[in-house]
Structures are given as structure tokens and as C-alpha cells.
Image 1 (spheres, one colour):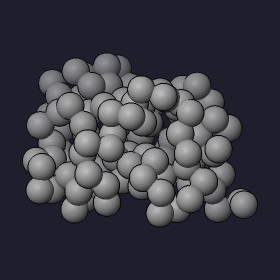
Image 2 (tube, rainbow, N blue to C red):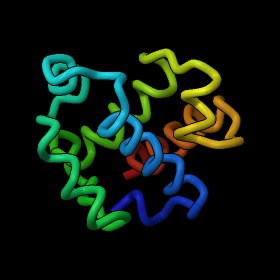
Image 3 (cartoon, one colour):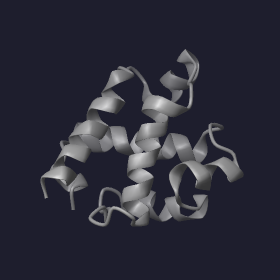
Amino acid sequence: MYLTQLSSADQDVAFRCLRAIYEGPFLDEFDFQTRTGVERGRLPALLERWPAADDMDDEGDDALLISNAMNEIANGVRLTDEEWRRWFGDLPREAVGASLMRWRELRDRS
């Protein structure tokens, strides 16, 4: 599993992205599946077993959710400064894209 090869800080960034996408007001029901590739109802199971994600299969639910949630936070949805602080605290915005790239690099090496 690629996620477990990341630092705990990168794992935390990914987890925060997943929570924000699931619990936040950023994607409505229609947009959620369109933009993540997975039904919203699949995400709670991933959050419960975190960081034990099955991210080996590119088309698997866990890999799609991790990739697309992080991408949405880094490049898609626009969070106000207040929303950012709520979901990410003092984490710099560019940290999401950097964590996403490290996760993708691990996947590309195999």
C-alpha cells in the first residue's frame, strides 16, 4: 500500500482532504461522484480504517478517493481562508499539492 509509505504528515494531509471533501460543503451529491469517481457513501469506510487504504489499484475506490479528494482541494474547489483554517489549520495550501505529488510518485515507481 502506497499510502503507508508516506510520512505521517503526508498521510494526515490526505486524511484532512478526504474529511473536508466528505463533510464540507464543497461538493454536492451530484458533483461528488462526478468529481471523485466514487459514491459519497463509500468514503466513511475509508476514513474508519485510515491509514489502511487499499490504494494499489488505480481504479479502486480508495485510490480514486485519495487522488481526487487531494486534487480537488489542491486545484478544484476554492476554500476561503476561514474554511481553510477549519479543515487544515495552519498547514500551507501548497502542502496539499506536494503531498499529492509524493503519493503519485510512489505509485509511478511501481
